[in-house]
Image (cartoon, rainbow, N blue to C red; front, side, top):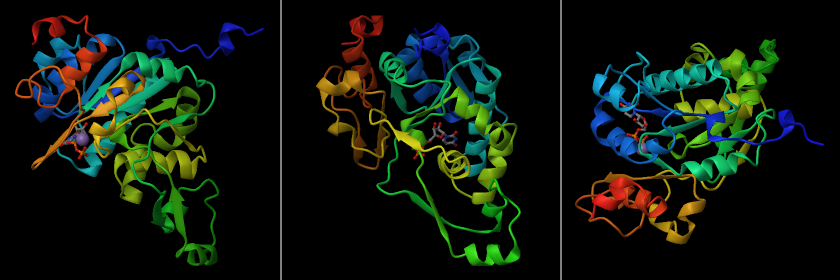
Length: 293
Ligand code: UDP
Ligand code: MN
């Protein structure tokens, strides 16, 4: 028989959801999230930002975390926020940590459903790469110093210097989830600013740094979960009849390219990124879906 302790039943309340954001996106991207999918997980979602904002503290029931990390799209600031998200998760007793960017739309019921296929007492790194082969990095002394067996001889260092290391990482902009068991294993390498220190050593973005820690240093492989989507994929390739099975969506508008979900409903002038339309396709019972026509 299966005791409750070992059943892999994951409820919404077993998940800690962190969203990375920045002051300049509060009134645009955050507003969009708060009016849509935030309402499905108000107690589980926390926003990690870089400024005080009383208006948004009120709108989120004080779920804005002022990280004191730097503003700007810099590797150091982004790694700093990721570190704070991780530390926050450790301070909770939740079973899974799921990270998303502020230009994601997350289909909460499907996220919960998919996580039920995994066990928080096992080490899970769930997400989706956006490149077709693993990332490659040249071995150097900084990388070798992070390995578990760090007593390398000078000869070994010299011999391995031309070696390339390869590992997969989950694209941060698609979202990813990490089980409690894996987070505990990561703790000595990633908690309390150590994630930032590793990012500084390898000089790659936060999502690559995470893949490096999990796949390369800890040897826990990425499990590819296809329903995660970033705007590095074409959003209009997702069919409407498959929306319900997806975990995350995104949007991007770069010059004259609109990478947005293809869904009819609201006028493109009122809903240029199609997020309200997507939300109302999935959850027509929401008030904003009745009023916005
Ligand atoms: N971001 C941030 N500070 C910045 C710019 C972006 O924290 O100065 C966050 C942003 O809120 C988002 C993530 O980093 O969650 C990715 O940013 P964006 O979507 O603008 O760029 P991308 O990396 O997707 O091209
Ligand atoms: Mn983005």
